[in-house]
Image (cartoon, rainbow, N blue to C red; front, side, top):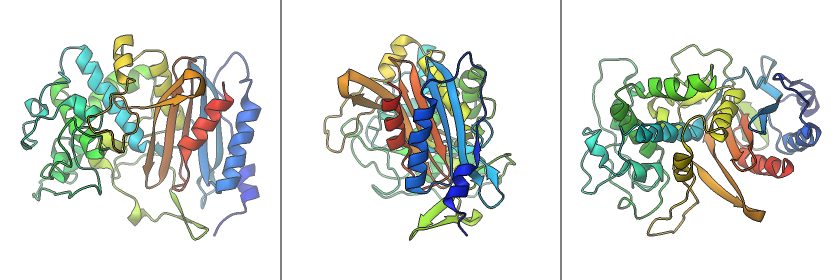
Length: 365
């Protein structure tokens, strides 16, 4: 049963970070968020504002678990990152490039010989740009390698997870066309693991999460007890329902493409780290946020290496990523020039977080 929307809007948590001054635009941001919550009947939403390169304002709206009356807390509620995980994988790969451990233009089979020869050279640069020709979910046949495994959760190992798609044919020749692919980023995570000579998840933890203080950022393994997980909600025919556990996608096999989880403040901390160049050098940042079109631009969306690049009026350049998954819709949007950003995480699967993020970024100018 749906609770009255008025009650939903009354249930608001506002964890406050230590700060020298209140966030000047908080009332306008809050009003815009509330209006969108009413318009789309959002169950739960976490909002974190980055200003001057630091977290300036956080607020939770509605329910992390409506049936148990658990409110959203941006510093506590665990939301799936979904495809924003790709940006983490990109940073991990580019850090290895800076160390001289990964060649962006080498054949990825140099690092992961388990991936079959497709008759064409595929590079890490191709994978980062979604130009590797690797199949996504429905743009070509996905052929799974049938094997018997001796462990309960074999696909938690990123190289073993290649069995979910590695025998699929390419959807285009590498480098010729943009073809967005979660599978391509799973392959990239295997490249990172081999090039870095350490488990992919451990590299991410050691070089990204721990240095940035992302203390509750972790792989979203369904078999592990992860406190404070948000419940997921669907909307069909105007009715909002809790997604049953049996319908919740197991994302353990696609860690590098969409398998991390954390509270919204950890997502914002990742953004703060990027804005402060705490993860990669200025030269790598420029490479990461530079768009290169493929030979065939049909269907092309401006994408650098692991990040969408959005040109706004007045020459303003925004970078970020969004994500969509059972239980979650997410967005991280940054203005590197102004050191501003917005992190949004919701458990309402019909919500468009990037649209709201763009609107809030315009409000924050």
